[in-house]
Length: 398
Image (cartoon, rainbow, N blue to C red; front, side, top):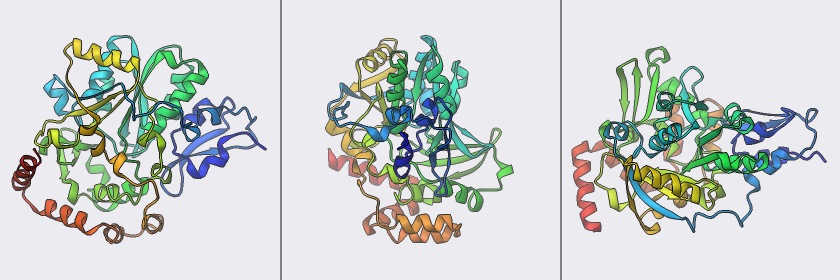
């Protein structure tokens, strides 16, 4: 029997680490018919070394690092107001990247490649290059080239990624004897949507592709709690769409078009192999904050040292919090562990290239009534009215 990860392809998260560690280049990662990155094995080139299996995040063992016993949890934000405003939440990822460059690290982060229409993990060696990493991308990133370079290099790197990507990088770095030279940062991950959704929205909903050259997935000009997506052409804003009027977000948050491996993903729900996990600090504490607050889970002694350095250097404001104030509000812990009813039908419609209106209608038919009412009301209400209702609700919770 060939000793590789081919038998795991039905569970493949598309993290790309297997292809990065393969000494024979027998593995490649490409977008499959469902619109997700997936590893493909060339059996003729495979020599059954088993390195891909060692690195695969699907081979997680229960006794590994657990999120249920983190070092510390924080609410935090950058003291640089410009940096905080231009970031998706509180700007902590940008602060950590800058700290890394200052202290001799290179940085692996995610950009959106407008030419390819894909998110990609790339390497940066200057503060200027890390600015493209700002903001959540909400798309699965192609990692193979960057991860190969990180693993073969003798330099120090800070690597940002999703929980499955970072779990794979941790295992690969241990395999290659590189773990002590890496700082790994993952995120509270909702899951990754099919590229078929993004392609359909770009084709049917957005203006002609030649009219815009940049997309900001989380524009905070309407406030941190409002998921505003904007398209730009140079310095000009071409389109600005609210969350509940944006078909991409409607389908993304429906949970009906995520990668099948995302639903029961242990790396996002239970374990973290990172030094630090970052995300938005949702919940009652910052209900009325519109500038953005980051959640930071310190998962290792190395992560604690970096975070402490950022506080001491007055780069961030940080407040220690309890798990009860943070964890229950993260979607990764609220979402189910099983593939939901309706996903099969939605994915079939996407693969058949059905019209966007048809796909949205199908997705809404599987939306719980209370959620549908809430989303409809939010979409119809003026922003100032919605904010007032949220203020009243916040006061009631206190």
